[in-house]
Image (cartoon, rainbow, N blue to C red; front, side, top):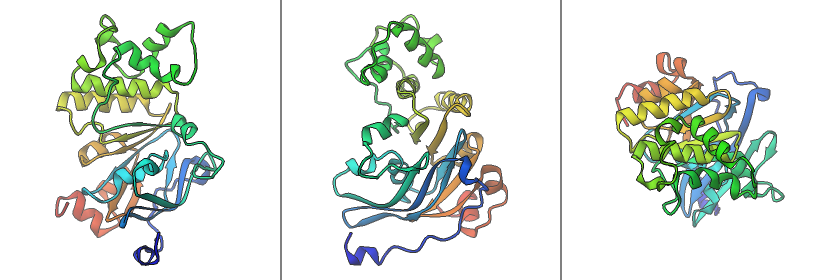
Length: 273
């Protein structure tokens, strides 16, 4: 990062009213600053992510939401021209330390993308099995494992008689749940979701939200969403991002019912964004 870019960064300010104790956080970001070429995306984000809880990231387009969650499992660095400084601590270890293998990080911190992306040349069964087969795990109980993760993703009853069909033959909502099953098969501790319902109809969206509720506690989930009602429905904690900064971070019910910041109030009441 050159000197001119560095001048645009601001010192982190106090914005965390969540009450999350250090020992309750599975991930903690420490002054994370990110950019693409000369475009600054994050201006110093310091947040704890509570273990076993659902955290929503809200804010208008271009505010750094997706960039932020991609820094949490080192997906940001694969984008040409991307840069980062600061620390991301997972279970107390900085995932950007030179000795840390990013592939290992992404096994522990999985991601589901905005657009469902089942492997097009693979069947439903193969899509789920790919998670542990790519890790070199050869199981004598492959079918049982496939069933287990499809049940985890609330998809088994809909596809159990069609496991040999291409994953791409499913509806959009089913494809997204298949991608979630595939992500869970890697057995991550954290699941990142980048607007997982943006391309889905209301019925499919409701199923994904029900799934998030069912996974709470067993997994830590961080979800980026433009839908504030969705954040209110599924999240234990919510962070409001604006122009690369966190404006407010608190328990979801508190942030929506009694925001501490005027910008937050204006955004959630529709005055801007």
